[in-house]
Every structure is written in C-alpha cells, then in structure tokens.
Image (tube, rainbow, N blue to C red; front, side):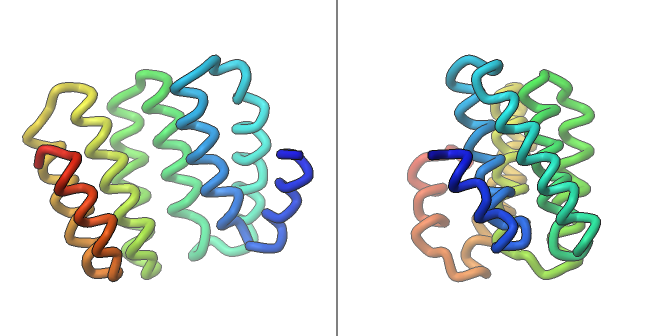
Length: 148
C-alpha cells in the first residue's frame, strides 16, 4: 500500500516525497532504522531528481532531508550546516513554511544536544515564520510544547 501511494510523488513535484521523507525519518528514529532505510533511500532518490528538474522548488527540501539524516547519524556539525543551507534556500525561494520547518528541526537538534540558547533562537525564528505564513495553530503549538 505504501509503495503504491509513493507514485503520487511524481504528481506533486517533490512535495509529497519531501514530507514522506520527514515522516520516514521520524519513524526511523522511533523504531528500527533498518526497517525504514530503504524507504528513506527511495525518497532521497526522488527528491534529488526533483531538485535537478526544479532547483528553486526543491533545493531546500533536499538540504533539509540531508540535515535530518546527518542529525540521526549523530553528525551534529554537518547537520547544522545542512539546516542552515536549507533555511537560506527556503528563504531565497519564498518557501516560508518550509523555512519554518527547517528552523524548528534545527532547534530540535540543539535541544537534543542541551544547547538551550541556540534552540530558543531557532524556535523563536520558526514561531515568527509560522505566524508570517498564517499558521497560528502551529505557532501556538510551539508556544505550548517547546520551552523557548
């Protein structure tokens, strides 16, 4: 069923593959990495193809997924570089909501590594971006659940 639904990625020009990748990476973190590695690999392959077709629409998505992978592998410095590149690329190309997601995910990395000052900075930026995008509910959720 999952593989059947993955074909929809071609129809959405990488958007579905990107969000599937974020979900699969979260699932890998909460269960057996091996169980999700082939799914993540397929998503990365698709997002790379979409990035080649439409760089301005997909570069930040690919960078964010790469950051998430580096983060899961414990490569904090490499992950941070990818998060920062994803944030800049999303901003440059007008993807405010995905810029917010990249900031939030970077903040999560800092929080996992006990750097509350940097986590607060990135959560604050994510909060502002969610509000700018009009996602009041998401901004409120950050305020309720994240100490920034």
